[in-house]
Image 1 (cartoon, rainbow, N blue to C red):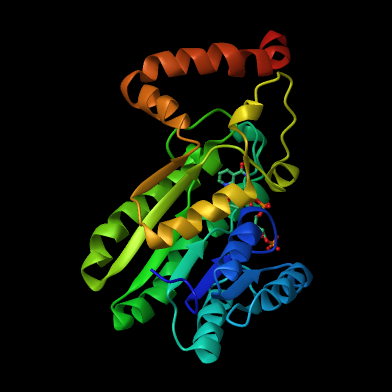
Image 2 (tube, protein in one colour):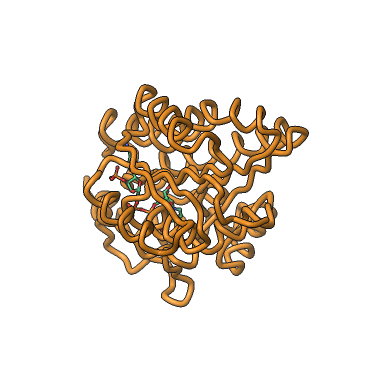
Length: 274
Ligand SMILES: NC(=O)c1ccc[n+]([C@@H]2O[C@H](COP(=O)([O-])OP(=O)(O)OC[C@H]3O[C@@H](n4cnc5c(N)ncnc54)[C@H](OP(=O)(O)O)[C@@H]3O)[C@@H](O)[C@H]2O)c1
C-alpha cells in the first residue's frame, strides 16, 4: 500500500512512540493528524513534518483522549480538513505503577482506564463509520507486553492493555468484511517519557535487560509496516514471545519466579514489619 497521501491520525503524538510514529508517516508523505494535550510539542512536530516533502502534511488537534467531546472534535476536524481517514493509530496512554493499595483511585486508576481503554474504544467508535463508508482503513492499537503477561505493580496498566487486546480481537473479526484491518503491537520496554510519568521506585534491579530495550523509532517503523502488512499481533522484540509462551503454558512457574524474585524482595521491609 502506498502511504503517500494517506490520512493518518496518531494519538499521543507529542512524545515517545506516538511522536516517532507520526514522523515515520511524515517521511512516507502521509497527511498526519497529531493529537495530544501538549499542543506546543505537536506544533513543533507539525512544522518538521510539513518541511519533509511536498506531500507530507501535518495538522494539530489538541485533545484530551479521556474526553468524548475532544475525541469527536479530533475526528470532525480531520474530516473537515482532509475529507477521509485511512489509518488510526491509537497510541495515547500511560502507566501509573505501584502496589494496588497505593494507587490513587481517581488520578491513577480511573485516569488510566479513561485514557488507555475508553480513549481507544471511543476514538475507534468515532472513526469506524468513516472507514466503513470508505470500505477501507487500518486501525493500529498500541498494546504492550503487559497486555499479554501481567506483572506486580502493573495491575491497572495490565488490565487496561488486556482490555485493548480483547477489544481489538473482537473488532478485527467485526470489521474485516469492510476492508478494515485491525493490528496490535506489543512492545516490551521502550525508551520514552513513560517511566517519568509512571512513578516507579524500585528497590531491586528488576527492569528490562538493556539489549531488549527498544527505541521509539523502532516501534514507529513497525507501526508503518503494519499499514502495509497488517498482523493480528506483533510482539517486539520477538524474544518476549518466550515469556508469553511460558505464561500461557507454565503459569505456575512464572508465578513462583515473579513472586520470589520480585514481589518478596521489593516488599521485604513491609513483610518484615510487625
Ligand atoms: N514506553 C514503553 O516501555 C511502552 C511499552 C509498551 C507500550 N507502551 C505504550 O505506548 C504508548 C505511548 O507511550 P510512550 O512510551 O511513547 O510514552 P510517552 O512518551 O509518555 O507518550 C505518551 C503519549 O500519550 C499522550 N497522552 C497521555 N495522556 C493523554 C490524554 N489524556 N490525552 C491525550 N493524550 C494523552 C501524551 O501526550 P500529552 O501528555 O501531551 O497529552 C504522549 O503523547 C502508550 O499507550 C503506552 O502504554 C509503552
